[in-house]
Length: 390
Image (cartoon, rainbow, N blue to C red):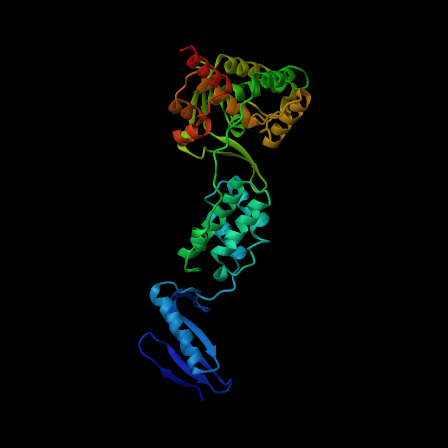
């Protein structure tokens, strides 16, 4: 016969299981949702912690520890869920609807490539700050960039913070790690010689059709996705303005997708330079000729820079155009460098930080100041020369 002995209020119950020759302890630790198997109705039920031991004292000690955790608000229900299991659930259930497809995929990449095989198999309840610190140190020692190490931490920290709020863990152990210092990387603008070599190749076949696109890129500070998402409705020739209202991205899950800007500042108006205006007019004429040749095969979506059939041009193919032009020009250039070049020249010609930030679509002017406040070598020489004249 199983005999139960009640203890003080809130201290639980201890009883001896004669048939099994062991002691059992039970303690109320909170409330949980219970689904009625017959009706499917969700009701509130008691969440009971149970433990077993060879003696009453052993069980009593366990109950006291859990009762202490309960009173301090640090009690976590026992679980065999691993960090990897939880981060998968967190991403798919809590984050997928809120994140942009590209951001969601980058989070998944961090999880699968850097977390799963390292700390992913550790039980969520057993994960420690030391586990994470060693992970970040090892990744940095392996040559991984500081930015990527911090991105791994961003995923882990976000998942653990949600786990804490859901009481899957008592504390977020990632909050006390020491992260590698993130230094502001100076953006490299194209030299006049590099830019000339690049556009010299674009003036030749088969690259000539791309000259207007890269001219607009170099004369506007647009991001690659913003350029490829431009529609003719965004071009105001009368007032010489360009309206940036969306960007084009490609993901494995969502495919080609037009997205609204991440921030309100990214939704902006950029005055057209004479070169950009001329390039856009050239593009309009060439596109009209291409439409006539393609006939019914042209899927007109109103895009300024589209594939030959009118559909969106894949960002990765745009990068391949740059790579092949660079091979011929014997230089190294990225799409983003045109943005850096444009910005550097704005600042060199006296544009203030606030105006520059607005044109670039930066969320904060401080970002523009941190990234582009360096002077070019020529300006440094000019400053020194003027100082020497006095």
